[in-house]
Image (tube, rainbow, N blue to C red; front, side, top):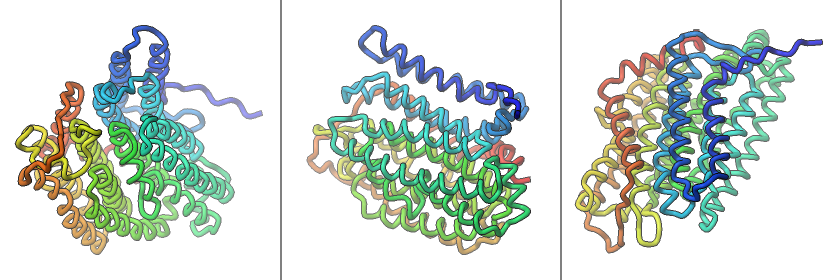
Length: 483
């Protein structure tokens, strides 16, 4: 009889803190008072506590393996815990006043957000394909419900249904891929898969399993041709939820994808690097070109996020410590920038709902110069204008690709960045150079939302002006994976 593995819950400490906060929120939701303003504070406290625990574990410097190496708490996982906790904390701050304005103050919102964050953190710590599946499902099922939280809005229900149906379809591909990889290698553990794949790198069953696995991950990161859910979900979901989907879920999916490719399937790199080259080129180009035609800001940012996935795939194609480290740094910069952009949109309203059309922002610089400048900074960072975080992130990504010999892919990335400048700068032109178009637009005061925007602005400026310490942390995080 095989002995049961020892229970080492320390490897799950940050995730358990967030999960415990979610359970506490559900319990407090049953108790008075009827107003639920305090639940946002409880959720935020749980995320901050998990972040502090991750910092403490990083300082300790000891890697923990638990449950027969199915869960790994190393510096790579902890780096993604930082990114995911930042994304979740910004989403909570943006939600506090936003939910009250829309009459959807409910404890289950914060509980689902925390459970989704737990799934994201589990993905970052996965050392086994079964844990990858469990993390994806815990994250996704919570996000499906959150996307349809505004029950009275038809677009919200449609977003939730599309997200669920396409997500379930992608999960089928992921499970088939896991089954085939298990059939080819006899294990779902990353290290054992790597040993078996190294002995038979051209195994047909393994190659097919890898392809199906990439289909499942392609949906989660919204790469072409698995991106069609993103615009509808981004537009229909509550804006605070959209910010979490665009940042935290992508970071978690990339955390698992990078570990799978660089650890478990390193022997198959000649196969997946060629495939990802084509996917990166298509994703960058399709995202940026289609974004030009969008007049809805949330849909525009959805296609923008698809394009940024293409940029991050460039780092994966480049490989090595430089490429993987560049992806980690870019994800950190992208989290602050994208969450901030959605946060700024969340603070502007029309008389008949959210102000999400580009024309709604005409003359915003006159009505509220601070908010216009803040949104402008986020958009310039997304373009890649120095000295903001987006520029440094692209510099690291494209630099790693050049050093790895992928010159043409880098040229495509630079050209796509130039294309992207058009639709980002168009919003800035509307804010500063157009008169209001007769639509009644008001600015919504939000103390918590203002704090979120301030944190995001500090983040993109700090990462742009002083990138070296953060880039070094990213390199330290990926070093054990690519040695």
